Image (cartoon, rainbow, N blue to C red; front, side, top):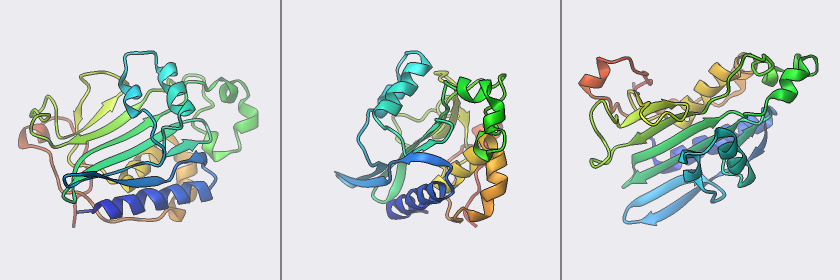
Length: 224
């Protein structure tokens, strides 16, 4: 199972990879924080208000505040924000929040597609029928939080729907999360640069229950 140090190294290296490939224009390298009582956090280098993303306010206001306070690990060239935060208890992962906040302000790209058509990073955002919505992979294994099926330990939330918790088979590493985002939302760039991204083969142990496996769920690679 990946340790806090390994997770920090993954976030750091993947950040450097994306900066080196010119796929993002702003970044905050990860920081390790000792919270006491066996708790350690791998989070964003700056201390922004991550809870702001969960407030009941319009999405464009959430996005603006996260961008203003630089509460992100990466800001992609199209304005999308990526967050990666982990909490460990006695070196075992207890929680994570991995979020993708696409920019709600894509008019510049969509109204001038000829300018951006030849740049791989913009290939997926120049269509006017695109509807930007946030995506979040959450993990929390605390007994007071987990409810079989209704609140899986690891789950995927699409949009800001309060009760959207699609079961996920295990916690995600930064490598799996970044790969998911690039492959699905920056596919043109991903196919061009895939072999230039650092590969990490460590995985977390499965956390899904038998009942949740019987539902439609997201399957994460497991340790070999």
